Image 1 (spheres, rainbow, N blue to C red):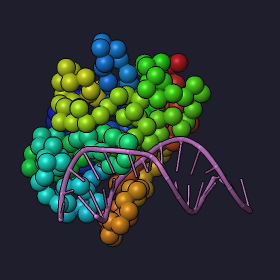
Image 2: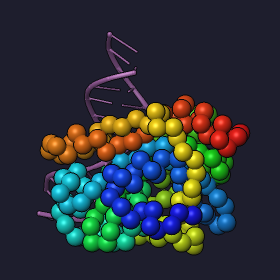
Image 3: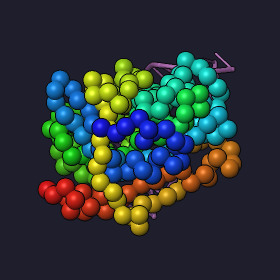
Image 4: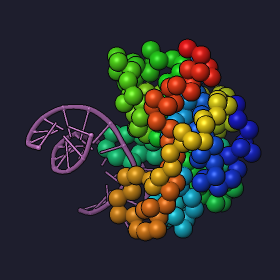
Length: 203
DNA sequence: CGGCCGATTATCT
DNA sequence: GATAATCGGCCGG
């Protein structure tokens, strides 16, 4: 399990380092886990794409808190999204986990999110992976540094830097510049990730 | 493969 | 009452 100090830095520095880490969910002693392959950084009240731009509210309270906790947000209709709180207390910052490559507990994930083919489009979206891992608002504020939370992050592998694509964040709607184009999204393609994971972990 | 559209709810103004 | 860090189905090329 990763130490809290790993999370205690600005989101744009933490986000690329989360690629390759293992997102783990424990439900009734069962383990669901996947390698993180896509992240986005949201940093501070000055970042007009960040929910915390409006200041401290009931919703953004977790983001203002201690790093290494889960900020789980309900953005749209039937979806939940998982964020990891970054930076120091009092400074709102978080990483949105946008995609994972499934590793453990695939059968259980499939019960939550059917996909018999288990193809590249199974867990490649922030609301898809929360559905598969049964992550909802109930887990908002969970401490990722405590195993009993049922959700935490383990060390995984390092993707070669040349496979990491860096681009602007997506789905930000009417967010003004320069925040709309801020290159705070990092991702490794599904086939690239698969190749490295099979080589490193063996399957 | 890209664009359009409807689902439908927590949170904030 | 408006808005939203999405998804999947349907359409046409």
